[in-house]
Image (cartoon, rainbow over all chains, first blue to last red; front, top):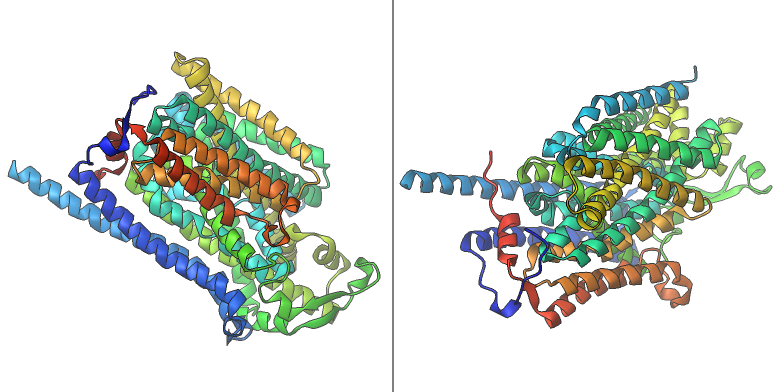
Length: 108
Length: 521
């Protein structure tokens, strides 16, 4: 692609080809769901720290409080788990697309 | 020879060896800027972690936890989010786009030289704000451990970086970054293992620290004749020093978590993988390393606090150790813990780890900024018909120009607050590139004007809210103003795009290119 401008009104833009539209929808839906789960956790810890100190100061073992555990250990595990789930769903979609491509190839 | 000299010399020797061994690869643009797009997930994932985990992370986060307790922990918590969001929305599509620099994305998305030029300005602003405190930290580390002057520290580190990036290109830089992140990670694992072996279990040490209220014996000599006072209850909960209210905490979550999405030196790493699949695995691997790293840093800060309190109470801390804890600053906590647990050999290893952190982070910033000058400015504005050789030479000259620019910045910020500058870099990134990359990848309706105005508003509002913070109402005087600037930038992109309504005619082809299934096994 080169840097020469050609524009079109957004309302006149033709729809995306079905393959790209399906891939985009599947990926963005999964990403949004995972992001919501992640941010609900992050914001809950943040808000509860200021609104429910009694709960967040609950001791789990020794001097380890609920908020210390959530912030310094569970949040870091969750950062990895959310990304791993995203890769897992990507893999599932990838394998399905390979299968579809192979079956199309056999049909030709 | 002192172990700290031995380990540092070995590190520098290895860097020089790798740089010269990879010199032959830095002869074409695709090799110089993106390492021939040949890095697998293990190498690139390690390098991404190297880019992300700076000296401030290696030494500073444990130091923040040591001194501020939970507030230091919360600061790290905000930093730890960004790479995951980047992996979810950006990594795969950006690799499929597959060019050389961050401005390339905006320029080709809109076929717009103006978007390219403005993106170059933003890259230089973010990288400059980020590089200056890194150089400040590097010079302070040299001062602390080797007794050099501040000015020598800045010039020495910049000189090493010019050689390292200018000669080795992306390949040499990536291998060096990967090696350096594993040096740091090994140092942390050794410290973690030793601390657990010695019985410093998390719950047990937190229990003692939280219950400690009152004077810390033996600190008066170093604190104007009065013993330091510790308040365990305040230390172990939010509000211990960094955050005034809930809005400030939320603002930091938004600013720092979205800031990572817009960091140019992290974004361009995804161009260096052979496929989108490798880019996704690289991101996942980097998140794994970074998460483990953050968790260990926070634990070591807590161990440091425990060793300080128990050592002071028992009177077992030597004057040097007591001085390091009381007046050494945040960078001294990890080295001091290393010295107490493992003596001078472990201390030497940790110091080499600190240098590794400085080099790996700065080299990423050098690559990003020199790419903006050598590739975007030279090849697209100054000499559009440049030969391959001229482009590579422009890249190498850009590395020197960036080095001089960073060096001057480093010398100017001698007395600046590191946290303010890093915060500014993250907030600018969250308020400029984060909206335009997220919307540019996932929304066909974004227009060139929307993107440019979004970046202008994001950059201007971030700089105003950080540099002129005192002019704002007290309840809005936040360290990271992301709660205001990030939604403002997103809204500007959306509203201006809606009003403009003129999208590139080939936007569907662009979306097809970056989202089509990559079926290479």
